[in-house]
Image (cartoon, rainbow, N blue to C red):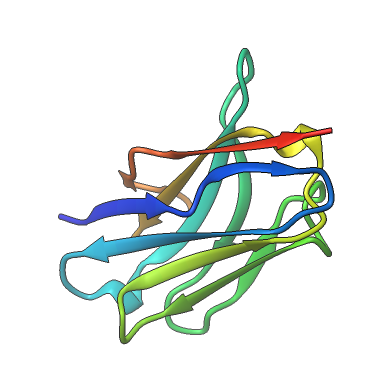
Length: 118
């Protein structure tokens, strides 16, 4: 069982930066693939970024490539999402997720709101 708690959301202006953090409890954090997803009002939840356990391979959605950076600290059981050059369309609830394979995310946090004003 893994529990995830996100923090760092807020209200910013377009062009600003935010850093989201996700603290994980449970064992074997370093083995989990960790991801960030987001859900905007009236839209489906969408993938943002992920970082694998072990090799630490990274994937990004095309919409955030070059602006967002995902990283993890296995010693602290945390995963972060550095978001730069934020746009109004980045406004959403951002969720942290964990999975023990390359396909499925099993555990989810409660989400943190990010609002980007124009």
